[in-house]
Length: 539
Image 1 (cartoon, rainbow, N blue to C red):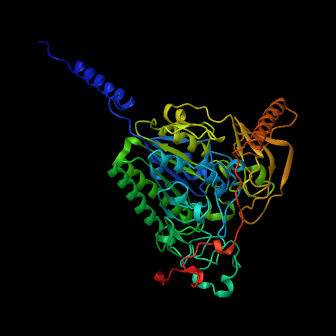
Image 2: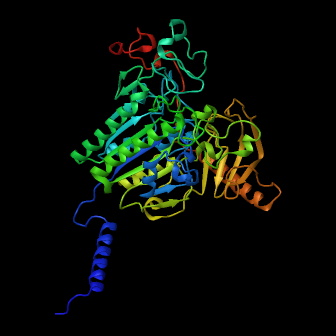
């Protein structure tokens, strides 16, 4: 018998490894039933594209090590956009796969809102719940907090979080804000009767509530311990689902980057952001990243190869908050900023809706990959349902696309056209007056957003539209000359598609209309007899 040479042994080991890899890539054997995948959707509030270290390696920051690792082990999407540039419309579109002009949510709901996301809309958790999934949500809801509009009535089996933004109620130890808000105990009865106090933007009538399922468990809540409460709940949900062998959807909406910021800071820590690793905002970003890391580790330890984690943002940074706002990276909207006003949150400039996005699924999503496909948060809805084997309801029209092949197979073809709705700056709420087509982007209206320092650009209607080439001009500084052939071809193509979409929406019988009525009695209140609705047991 001939003795095997080292070269033959190495070749045999290599072949064996390739066979193992092939088996791994092709998934379970035919006689083993395929498990339904788990989904963890993490939505960060007011986060900038440039806040993810992996998007700006040249900055040499170290604020998002866990997200960087997730990108290294998964897919980083560089041309991914929130469906709107403000809170409620973005969340509604993510959970329904439809523009606000279809789902009815075109601007934010408030503390006194009577309703929320229209009950005629079908949500992602409702469909997964029917398919046998355990569905849970942690964090900011902002789609209606009363009765049938609350999370546990919109498809979630469990909920722990804040019903709206974390600046829409007072706390005993306020976080960092601009302007700085006063603690709850500073407000006497004469101030409590007002909707907002003299500082403007600081809500004083109620304490910020923490809700579990349908009950207020803390009011006002403690912003400084909220991360630990969220972390404990998230890990419990992941471990319980694993033990019970039930597939799950965990939707985590984190408001760490939305003022007021409440990061863990040592007494001598600087509170300015002159350096990427110093200051309040950077500390908040690191706390958010650490929580993402804990969730990823728990998922890896329980059902690593069968769980998709998808991290993204609800809109860009809140520019008027100055040192407490994030980084838009190179997407500075210079045409607008040169004329005054903001170019981030609430606007349709890239800084308002291009958000950091990472998808991670070991064995399914190729590691250390990047996609420049044009994608939207609306695509989460059809993609997750497709991966779960759930058919989209046929009684309505959708605007999101199934991005499965982009996630799993490296395909680079996303939306041919993507519309960015007016989100609180210029124009009527929800109107689709900014359009992306390939490398080109057209604006039919601009302005009216507040910048750091208080300047507000004048609202301008553009006919013909401003058109930018984002490949040559990612800062959106110099529009194309209207006399060029390039401009004329693009303008005509975008105008035709915009007209077609508006007609499609106008004739869509599944369009919902949100009820934006308000009443003071609608505010969540633990005890009406107590100042700021304070829960008696909390003193």
